[in-house]
Amino acid sequence: MRNVIVIFTKEMKSYFASPIAYLLLTIFAVIFGFFFYSATRFFVLQGMQMQMMGRGMPMDVNEYVIRPLLTNASVIGLFLIPMITMRLYAEEQRSGTIELLMTSPVRDLEIVLGKWLAALVLYAAILGISGINMGLLFAFGRPDWKPILVGYLGLMLQGGCLLAIGIFISTMTRNQIVAGGATFAVCLMLWVLDWVSAYDQSAWAKVISYLSVVTHFEPFAKGVIDSKDVIFYLSMIFFGLFLTSRSVESLRWRS
Image 1 (cartoon, rainbow, N blue to C red):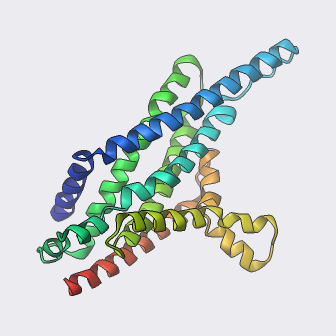
Image 2: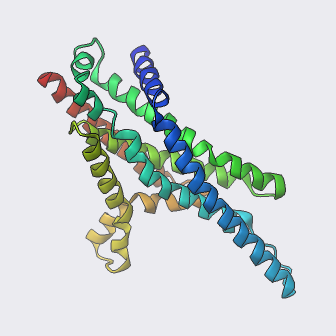
């Protein structure tokens, strides 16, 4: 565990010693802030129109504001995750420091876990920016906090899944741009796999749709924790880290 913490600390320092972390935090803050403004403005306008028409039925903040915001946050993460993972191993290979890392008395799994945890914590920090916007909702309204926590749990599980895949791809190339582009392509594919169910209901189509990360996030966005969705994300994380560990093992033999 000590070696994992050392690798984790090293990666966190490298993130914040460069413009990467600050750039990602800024991008997320600006885009999510725009989504927040649009969602709340629509909510207020709809409420005013209902009052003018004499309708007394209250609008649900969780339904009209928070759920779309959580879904939009997952979409933003789709673009930011490749930027988080693309340098983790590709930069090590390009700069030649991979030989020092591979010959150090640290197990492959410890290296992988340290880097993945650092990427996950950075992703959590990025999502944490949205807490400012959520705080405004609590300051001026009465949203239900439990579905919000469930939604953020879903975002973390989905992010951990895609980060594990991105780290694996980063081990396969020396070029950060290639690693980032390939990660985005794979993440996007996992994102749109559920489209198959829109025009095909056969057994193979259901299997492909089940592999979509969006399919398993929707219950979280509604405030529902389903064990099959949690198991799916944890299984994908394990599979991605397992592939990364095997790839790192091959790098160790080549270094």
